[in-house]
Length: 462
Ligand SMILES: *Cc1c(COP(=O)(O)O)cnc(C)c1O
Image (cartoon, rainbow, N blue to C red; front, side, top):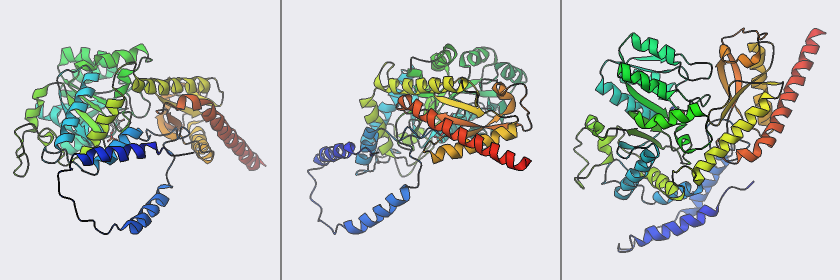
């Protein structure tokens, strides 16, 4: 296994071009390089970094983790020689412009020709801004999101001291629209968070039905697409998910994480508002900054102050290489991950040892290990997870409400409210060709676990 290194040459070339832009400055005296000491520090760091799961390898098929695109890595590193701060144009003139261009391209991907938006340190901060704006516009009103929505919505609402309630989700992990309607009838709902791609299951909330309810009840709709947003570009969704993505143009705000499916280094989130006039809510005055021009400084429309301009440079370069268009190379990468998820789900459904929790809507697969009870099945899942890791296959675990897994069958003893299941986010395009290898290792891990348990039970009976 080799780590990609060709981009190091690109980085050297990029630095040549950057340096030429500052050729008019007087040379700096050459100081002591300190290279040997730096080398020792870096070597020590590299040794420490070996204690990581191999996120860059297709056998890492667990959480939502993957390395950035080489061009993003090189662009981010190149920007480090300047280290721009996109809070103000004084701190990052070029990178602020690049941020605005890159963010406009993301907005256009959702069908918005005008918008207000910017990058953030991640999805949590982006959602915080969206819920903060919702709270400012409708003080005292309740924000609701489904039980399967990201846990941070409730916590963010607590930080903002805005009321929050969870709406039950259905057997497919989507917001239960009938339950939402009942809650709306009770009144006081100011904002509905629709998740397009839940973090656990990759379930897509029924946005068209939610928007229909908005006609009657008049709430704001915020779409949390931190994980799933880029799937709007793909051509292989089922019709219900497709319908939700097509309705995104109608929502009030969107959050998407370029550091998840957008091939970016952490931290790169993005918040978008459909109404450009939302900027008035951010209005503040800083005595220190905003002197270099009368133009908009990104810090005037964001809650965070200092932010990495390098994130914008990396995103801008990536979108230049891989434009956000349906049918493009970037979209093809997501389509491959989705095919991988469908292929894995099909194999698991046909295997008596496993119970598929739900048909994947995006690229996440969740399945249980069959057994007599929720507690026994949970133990098996944990053991299969450990045994797979010993085979270099890295999966994830998730606790699923027992009623959400009819696949376990009528006989299944529901001795716990939740059952631990296995979970795999197949977000690397290479996962598609690695499914047979992933399955072989998973089955071997499962067989080893089952025979170990059988032996243990056998001994216990004697
Ligand atoms: C990951 C995620 C978040 C949180 O984003 P961070 O970038 O981890 O802060 C919020 N919502 C959803 C749906 C997510 O998948």
